[in-house]
Image 1 (spheres, helix red, strand yellow):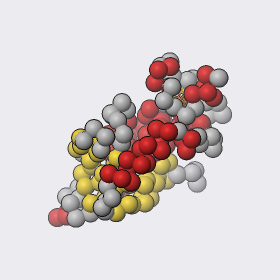
Image 2 (cartoon, protein in one colour):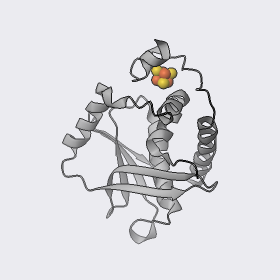
Image 3 (spheres, helix red, strand yellow):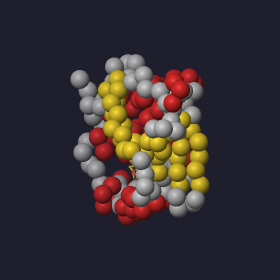
Length: 179
Ligand code: SF4
């Protein structure tokens, strides 16, 4: 069986396929990134009374094992929360939350009254939140992206680096990619 695909790896793929490939090779450098440390600190300080962290496992329709660690699940309200520092990768963040909602759905888990769970991205530094839903078209898109990601991870060579140096300056792999 192939290694599970996690929500974070999936999000990396949407931001930069090369980053997802490097992380899968074991080159995980985010712990050295101040940005990530700040993000963690924001999560810990802004939501001291947060509810539950969830670890989810599911199997995608094509048989790929999936895992997800959800920041905060407010189970009574049927809302999954994901905390982010800024909105520069908004689309990837939305699809990461949809990935988690998909995991719940694949497990047959529903919220209060049988309703589907809803997602919410919280930006504590911006004092903003954004609602995220999972529609059938999103599920089809997730399945397609997952197939593309699993195919990419099987490649013996990494994809080309992004052509956006300014964006790459925030990435822990910058030296590796441009060094
Ligand atoms: S430095 Fe740029 S190209 Fe390299 S992994 Fe990071 S985002 Fe991708």
